[in-house]
Length: 626
Image (cartoon, rainbow, N blue to C red; front, side, top):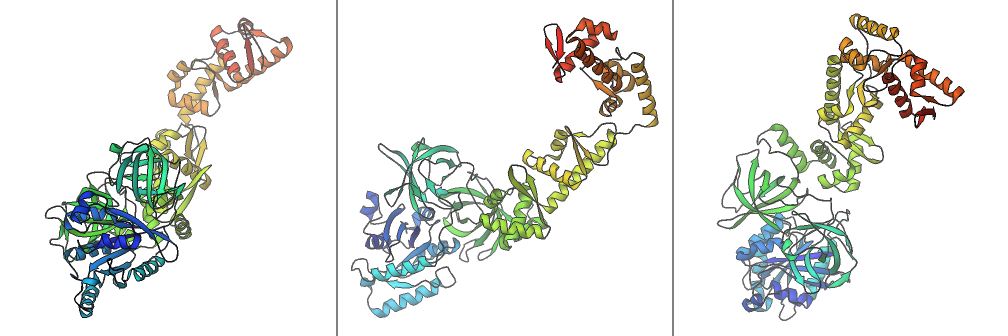
């Protein structure tokens, strides 16, 4: 599905030409028909000679409605640029042409209209020559000029053929599985509810899809789909689409919102961009000024932060951080237009580079400038390397969303980066593998090793750092941390042990003084094997760290928060219990107390411990082998 957008000066016959091409007059408002001037966007469609059906967005030409024009030309495949033969190039002709050029419209056709009003053929030749001079250096420099008269029908068949040729050179819109529809019109239909329209891109919509409207996050469901007033089960990328929404009220939607599937896009309040200022702009674009930003169908006020220079002069280029006052949906590669509010003037336009740059950039930082340069004109792998740096770690789909590259392009670029040692894969178990820039990997790995080394130095008697503490101190999300730990373990320098992680070379070793303390404590256990010192007494005598080390080294076996046994005594008591139960079948607490010559406190803790590990089973006052 393809969409053509009109452009040109007011009263040069755009709407009349659309009616001649399609049989449908695009003006919908009574005021438009009474004034014979388009005010809002109009829509129509027709069939090319090859049978392909295309849509047309008809835009206002008057300078007072330039902002309505901007809402309609963002998603077009080709321009139908209209110039009246009796007037030639006019002010809005030049401004509309500049907008088409800034938006990078792939091409189009120039319709020289009202040829029946031209004084003579020589006049038409002069107008065409002036037109060629005006079009030079723009996206329409090579566009054919077709002489037409909507009133007589002269040239209309040739115009259809020229449009067909222009569209043949435009690649089809890709289906990346992430549809988005910038809303350029919203209304209600009795009995159906809220309807939004726009040009669909990046994916298909289907009946029943759960959808969300950004930036507000209003959720709904696709109740109906139409393309050119035909009901469809699927709307394809590139098509003019009307979506009937269930669960969404008219007042919850406004022009400029973006309809998409949940969790595929996010709104942003700051994005990096490359900008080109028009040579005819009245003033340089200065740092910290406010402009009107036109992105998709959205129009918002935004603060400009000029990066790398004090101001960008007319005819110049540069980098910006744009900070819209209202969140917008921006994707790398999206084109936008900037206008100053007063006096109203189109000053330039550009391309989004990074929709989520994080904090404000230092304006003259060399690393920032190098990154922006790579994002502006680097290869796909350079772009992906920058994206990896900004995201930290991400799977292929997240990289595609952030970089603007197709999924196949992401995979190819990742292969190149990995072969060059600039990126690595982190296996995520059942989850899709994550990818991380080598520089980020080295940074995180170095920090993890340093933290563990410091921890072992501070707590040499502990088996390692708790896993959750390392994750917290590294400030890593769960989906990064687990694959990183697995990779570090595979590399051989990190060991995992229960809930702890440690450097592989770390081992708990007692100093001579600590060994003497341990021997003294264990001697106390040897003197009363069935009634040894309690956990509290052990901590008081040897200290928390040494007590913990003796447990870790297997010298002591805690059976409850209060009771602990020496390992050999624990094994002996266990074996004795098993032998007794095999001979007698059952044992009570009193029988165990008398058999081992100890108190109820120790016996009860030990028997409950054996119950908990599945060695014994309690039935009333008796225990049996489980």
